[in-house]
Image (cartoon, rainbow over all chains, first blue to last red; front, side, top):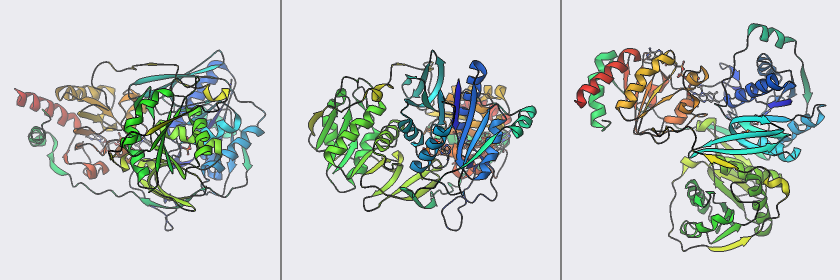
Length: 251
Length: 319
Ligand SMILES: Cc1cc2nc3c(=O)[nH]c(=O)nc-3n(C[C@H](O)[C@H](O)[C@H](O)COP(=O)(O)OP(=O)(O)OC[C@H]3O[C@@H](n4cnc5c(N)ncnc54)[C@H](O)[C@@H]3O)c2cc1C
Ligand SMILES: Nc1ncnc2c1ncn2[C@@H]1O[C@H](COP(=O)(O)O)[C@@H](O)[C@H]1O
């Protein structure tokens, strides 16, 4: 079983966001980088499949050369090798990104049985790169998968909706997009990290295209401090909270 | 003309589609709507009520349930026939998915989760990034605009229109279009108890709870308030609680009457999932925790002391 996972380097912003002076990007001077939780689950799923069935797990990203850091940390949990399509650091639009990923996938010797994506990227959340890749490669795609089994050449997938679970199947070779909660991603071990340093990361270049979904500027969504009423410290404040809960009819 | 996809589950409308219809009306053109699958034909009255003049029904023997690629193909056929200025759908998982298939078939851009749309050359949108914490201003270079509507950016408004007229058509599906579809369903893990998305009260715990055992106290309080337990991502990725309880960007979005956040710092990805709760109570040792900005009431202190004290005080008050 040969598996490919596509992932994207994103800043790990948790608290208040700050924009660059030209308002085109998030100021990342004081931020670490990572990948989306969905994509962590995608890599973990790939590692588990290769552990169970043998084969290889390849990682693919389009991003700045610094994205090697995200590839190495995912190689450390068990991926076989990685491919980095290097950009000048500008984010590419979904069509341009998908086209470059497709070219890189077609250039691989391995014909991947399964390609796994995150359900949406953490930062731009376009909900589409995987579907564009599926069309270009003529493969079936199941999105938003929360539980998956591979049996007899078929990916058997579940998607969670408000009313319960929906069951889909796709014959391999296929594409699935996965959601946080699919599994619990493991942490890299020390030997895993050592091995990852020696694994191959192929660097590639691609021609940028004129973006058709053209980012002009970013703005912070308005949010105002609700001005919490501090009821007090520790257990002493509990009676005041009980009064509040009574007032709002919580019991 | 603007074409709006009305999404439905075996004939039952997704109410977010009504918001998409409302957003589409603001573009100042005639509205026509599309449903995929003949069991959507019953939505003709509501489509008209929300402003659609015509309801196009894609009927095909291969479409018996949700079949996203076939939806994309059917919409492509409609676009080629009707030449609308835009195709709009709800910013739901299904809305985003079906329009992404349309955009992929036509190899044109798609703008997901838009809070504002202006038609032009190029078209212009405001769209949500980072779970709505950032708003992107973007130009869309394409004759046809394909866009989904950020659901909480608009409420649905009826225009009390008369029922739409029905036009049935048969999309030119290829075999590959219907390979992936819903094969079966089940009711999931719901144990008959209160689920996160319906709960009126959520007692939510974060890293500050310290481990799986600490959640016993939260469960007790939640049960007393006839609510349920929620948690942050640190908690699920540590395996302390099941993912079904995670609140936030990659978990469940909730809006209960009362949300108690204990030992949760308030990362924007968590806030994105609970900020619309009616009353937010925070229990945190850190008076500077970012979650305080979203709180109505707060106790600064150790949740391991505050929660048991709260539980027994409520028990007493209840008598
Ligand atoms: C793309 C993306 C998506 C994400 N999606 C989600 C999501 O859906 N949901 C989500 O929750 N997170 C999500 N995250 C993770 C998020 O950024 C934070 O890492 C996470 O929410 C932090 O969880 P926490 O508040 O429990 O932990 P921490 O940030 O570590 O906060 C712990 C808090 O507990 C307090 N505390 C400690 N001890 C006590 C005590 N004894 N009593 C009271 N208070 C105490 C501390 O003061 C602190 O404020 C996502 C991240 C990314 C990048
Ligand atoms: N630059 C990128 N390189 C590789 N994969 C990507 C990139 N951007 C997005 N993806 C993948 O496509 C998925 C969907 O992205 P999006 O369409 O932006 O929501 C992500 O979860 C990733 O798996």
